[in-house]
Image 1 (tube, rainbow, N blue to C red):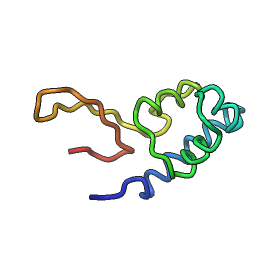
Image 2: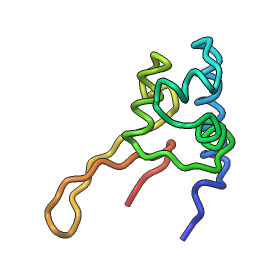
Image 3: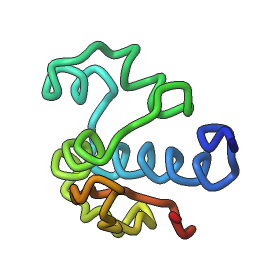
Length: 96
C-alpha cells in the first residue's frame, strides 16, 4: 500500500491549501479558531503531517472561499461491495 501522505501530489495539495490561506489573508490561528481546532492542527495539515478527509477539505475550501477544484482534487463516487455509495477524492490520480 502506498503512503499517499508522503507523495509529491499530496505535497502539492497541501502547498495549495497553504497558498489559499495566505490569499485569504488568514493566519493559522485565525483558521484554527474558525474551525474550532488548534493552531498546531492547521500547521500539521499544511506540512502534510495530518491527512484531511473530504469533509475537512470542504471546510477549509469554504473558509478560504475556494472551490475544491482549486486544489486539483477530483471527487469520485463509487459503490462498495455492500452496495453503499461513498465519495472519495484524489489529487489528479484515479481511484480503483
